[in-house]
Length: 290
Image (cartoon, rainbow, N blue to C red; front, side, top):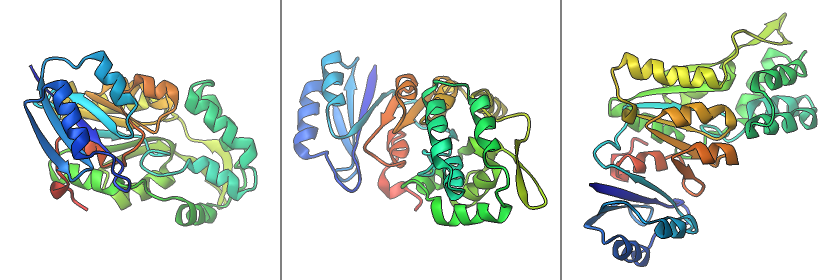
């Protein structure tokens, strides 16, 4: 069976040279190759399985890689985490920082991301500390502190343009997922609701809480509604809350993940930006919607 090895570099510091191409062409006895992005992403097609010693070499390189069946690599459903994946921050930590209590919140966030404590209890504990924060201050935090991860909009727009469904499912808050979806083009977004009264947060979150179970159920829901196969789906996230959907997708991608999420993922991206998910699917940079 023919497989494809995709090498993906950081776009600002390219690490894939002709020497790298020749090296892995020889090691794999590759039958053909194709540049997806000049010195940024490269496909190498080869027959059979890849040897473990070659995988070990790849893990030591300064670029990312994916090994797939080229026939099933193009996806029709993307399910994505938001915080520290589609955007570059954890919104709840930024809200806490705005109140001057980030030191009380961020360590809980990290423990939950590592899977050391339960997500629901951790969320309730952190939201309680936000009591009294004014709704108008959420807009300030969004405008001043929330930035898209490089490649996020290109990823979503390109998949949309090619007929895929794009779904943002976050353990964060609808206030932010709605705005991030507007910026990127996600067709669906789901997240937790911050309860408020008289223009201030009450310190409580609406039920039911959006968690890891919601993420995998959303993937299955939209997959089945469109009569897709498992291999038609791709999921991306970085924390323990994302593990079920990473395991349940045809391709689970850990984006700068915590160790437990990285172990669950099929592919780990530590060097490239989110356009890596397009290169994995065989898109060339000329096909990107930017």
